[in-house]
Image 1: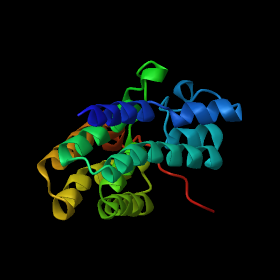
Image 2: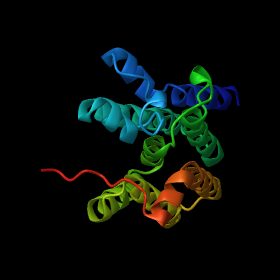
Image 3: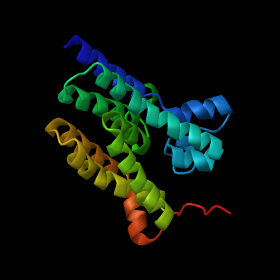
Image 4: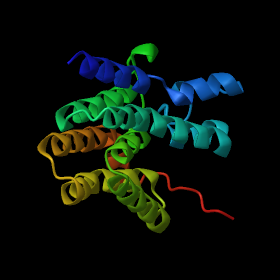
Length: 197
């Protein structure tokens, strides 16, 4: 029981490390919360600091979801604890204790959590994002579609109640955090991803 609590707390604290803000400070870039969309995530970091800063943010956000879940899996905790660890890492990103509880939207961290639970679920979710981003060139639409399909992939590959509940909760929170993007998509005002020349 003590180990479970330590894992959950570690996951939340890990999630609370805002990669975008850390990368910005290390690179002498402006705080992403005050620039662009105001979101401390990879997409906004692409606007604020370019491809390298965005890539570093994406990887950092993904690993802070993956590492706690992979650690919990290695310790062979039960599925309820695993689900709580994954949710804690995700909530840490959304509401980071180190940065005034003002975090990102959670797409990369959710992907890391899913990869830690099942690499097939994670890759399926990533493939959905990549396909939608390639075809429609809207990062937000790709994230929303991947969020909707993630619980379906988990149900097909590892259908345990605790993990399914966690996945559905993460997806609902992702949809909620993207509510302004949804409004812009519906009104035709959402910015598309730039094409590679």
